[in-house]
Length: 372
Image 1 (cartoon, helix red, strand yellow):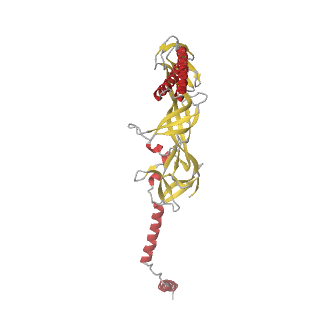
Image 2: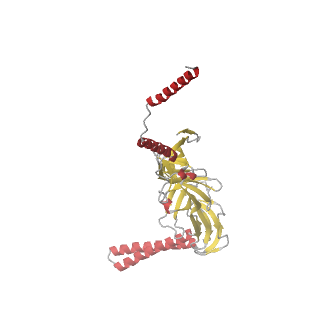
């Protein structure tokens, strides 16, 4: 046998062995089509669920005790303004005060000439003494049975008439002195020396500045929170601070503005507060638990209620209505939230109530991301 035939025989044998080995190896079983489809569906659901969770930024905020207050704008007003008038006629002989002067109750403002009023008092006194003597004499005669009851009654009437006439003349004499009815400030003068005063003529305008009243108007919503005696703090446009208490709350609203009048009583012993000043006020109410948030986080629900969006323990978005307690230029204090609230600060407008979200928590103060 030649070498070529031997080589060919060896190669052919190797080929037969290689082909035969393929028949002897067991082919792997085809995968179950149902199981394959189930695994693929679960994978697609997981990928879809992961992709459907919207990512939002969340900040945990804690409630703090906050004094609730009502902000008002009002004006100072004198408690009393009185035109002190003359009660009798006569020439003014003296004006004892000047405009702007502080006076005390009973202090002389204007004096009217006495004229014959002192003599009228003396005459009435003499008439009373005569009537008393006649009455005593009639009583002695009556005791002896020498005087009728009619005569006794007439004598008693003359005595009482004389007493009344004396009191009238004494009052007329006292009315020549026009005095201040209360402590206050003389705002204006209407009579001067030499003027002839008639009953009802004004002598001076007197205003009572202590205590001072501050009047303001409140809305229907605000009036429900007010309580008599509540502390009120404020300041004038020039920065002078004041403090008083709520002394009056109106019961009838204005027909046009639908607001209610309120009055605050302020101590003004030094008379530094003038009537007619514009005042900013805060009526201090009860203390409540409140959260500080920025106005940009506010939103509305379908019913038109104002509130914010939070997430609960299952990362589900919830709407929480709030009540604004105090509003400022950079933020506001609100009530109605849980003591520890998870507030959505970024992305709240892109998630619906009831949706599950992927929260990214941040620090309250530094706004730095800490966990997911």
